[in-house]
Amino acid sequence: MSDTVRILVLNGPNLNMLGVREPDIYGKETLDDIRNDCDAHAATAGVSLDFRQSNSEADLIDWIQQARDTADGIIINPAAFTHTSVAILDALVLTELPVVEIHISNIFRRESFRQHSYVSAGATGIISGFGAHGYLLAIDAMVRLTASKKDA
Ligand code: DQA
Image: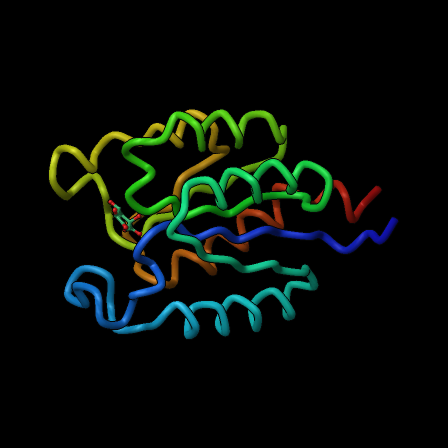
């Protein structure tokens, strides 16, 4: 088996609309811009990325389940499913993989319904409020969390 660390990056609903969606909250970068920045950062760090987005909870759950066999860690911005989805939490827990939950905005400074995350109970850690740069911070965190694979 290759010793290259494989990171699955998942993005939930409405994140395909970044750039035009509430830019005062989410910034002007599109999801493609973020994907390109992530790919460049991953190449520098020597890890491989599989970057995906879906508006469907079922897609996200299927991809998380598959990651049990195909990835070494999961970075996830569950978007609105953060605040509703026990099913995504359960899927993350069953993978037994390190998980970094990321939010572009600081969910704890926003409406009260955004201040609770079901997903966090299945996350190793959370990055929230650093804008699109948070994705790069999440990759750095995942490189640390999976370092033992490279050393093995
Ligand atoms: C978000 C925060 C969520 O509350 C919201 O529903 C999103 C994006 C963020 O990245 O800041 O869609 O996850």
